[in-house]
Length: 90
Picture 1 (cartoon, helix red, strand yellow):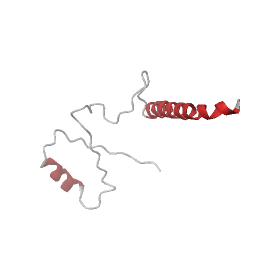
Picture 2 (cartoon, one colour; picture 1 turned 135 degrees about the vertical axis):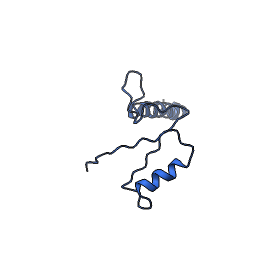
Picture 3 (cartoon, helix red, strand yellow; picture 1 turned 60 degrees about the horizontal axis):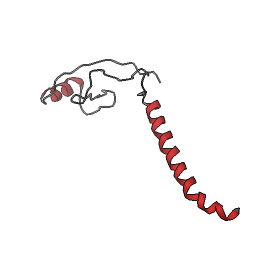
Picture 4 (cartoon, helix red, strand yellow; picture 1 turned 90 degrees about the vertical axis):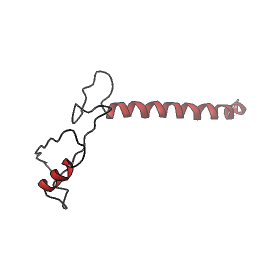
């Protein structure tokens, strides 16, 4: 009976890899709330495959003021600028 155990080592390894991959994919879907029926947590719902969001926090930016930053961004081919004030609770 003990002579058959080495033949199960590759099968056990492959099942471990299989279940780890499925568990990782399921965890990814749960953490990103992308399973069917889960509410999306998109910071800006108008983002699509041809539009993206870039967030610039003025509290982290020490080089430019808000007006200088707004002027520099306007020189690019940007479609829309939306400014929001957030209160960060620590």
